[in-house]
Length: 439
Ligand code: GKR
Ligand code: MG
Figure 1 (cartoon, rainbow, N blue to C red):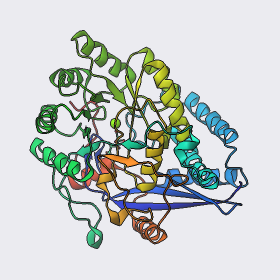
Figure 2 (cartoon, protein in one colour):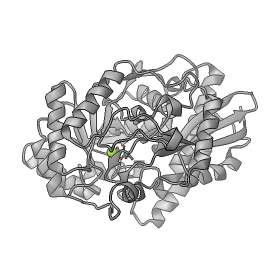
Figure 3 (cartoon, protein in one colour):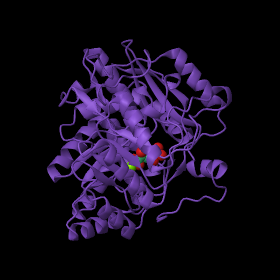
């Protein structure tokens, strides 16, 4: 089944003013929908990062794809892998994503591009064989993929601009009380059973208070995790780890409290010396297979945050799951703003990974029906889980009217790259700069 056409659809989806250590989310998040057509009349779709750089990389890959059999991707993987290795050699070992937004690391660019291609090909293969994507990975370890309530400190506003502004569903969230409200509302809507708090925004004492308030509200049966995206020094990370030793135990974790594998390793060692074995998770210090041996050797990361979008696709996700299980490391899943096509790819990936035992992250609750490109509208959640459909491939199709609307929004946007620091300066503090560590 040979690829005859590759269509790239840049889209923009309204996004509320969410905060993180990177800064502030812009009124629209940008994504790319990839569509491949084949000589058997079967199409495949995927979703990936948005903006100029991902688009240019996919454009460049088009020539390699046209005429390629969707069942024959190993050669393509090999050539992308060689390019990634050459980039890594050039960067002389500096593979950190610390200062870069996910999706912006030039060292991930080949695995990101390959992933978008591979997922679209698997969607087409699934459709040709009448099999769901997770069955192409060896079959499902579970019938549904669990996701977590991903809480963000946020300013008032629902995202979008002018006539296209969205209702502010969750309201402002800049205090522990408001965050409990946000969690209550999100859990009431989606049924999530684990909670992730995006930290690195308020003073660490207020973030500690937020986590305690969440535990006070939901009890110990709901595991909690906090992720300040490296905003803390080693000492602050230890202080927070100590303060939250109870709250983050029982299925929770401390995610990227500080920068670099060495920093994470120090945090781990010093917490263990105090008898605290809260696991450390990362999607910043560990972003490629090449990082895993060092992370393991230093005991810097106990839970690897997978993500099919930049680890290299659904098959790479499955390989990572196996590698982590061999090394005795846990696996969870990272997310960025995304629409329903990505949600389904993440759900299939999670379903096929027996070792992925934590509820995956998802930004999905922050987008609305007006911003969905999937036919039939928003993907439903049941008790915080997405059911794996019996339909072939990813199990979703595109709604072309919606796609056209989202493309038109992208066309009108003045930016072609996520820049949370610039947004922060524009709307919150003209002098704001990202600082690592800030506390
Ligand atoms: O959406 O602001 C955000 C997040 O900070 C996102 O960019 C991160 O990649 O969710 C992510 C994470 O877990 O680090
Ligand atoms: Mg993270």
